[in-house]
Image 1 (cartoon, rainbow, N blue to C red):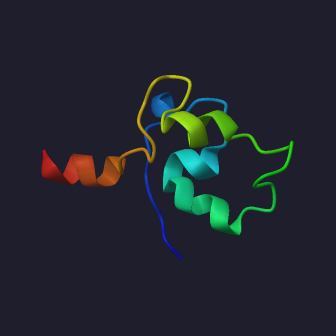
Image 2 (cartoon, rainbow, N blue to C red):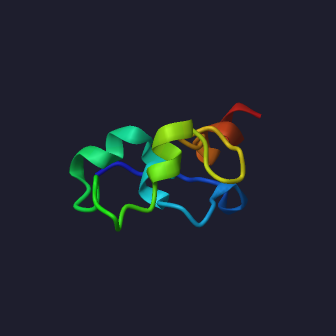
Length: 66
């Protein structure tokens, strides 16, 4: 199991799975390429609606480097 710590303020209402793990997350998503997919715009732009590049950085790694 992989874990990742992300800053909550960087998450938009779109698909959190894509925001945290990137476009690779779609490979195992049952909603990929369906009308229920919550990350269609992210897949087009590479950013969430807050304008933050996907995948989000690991906040745990950012804290360790300070």
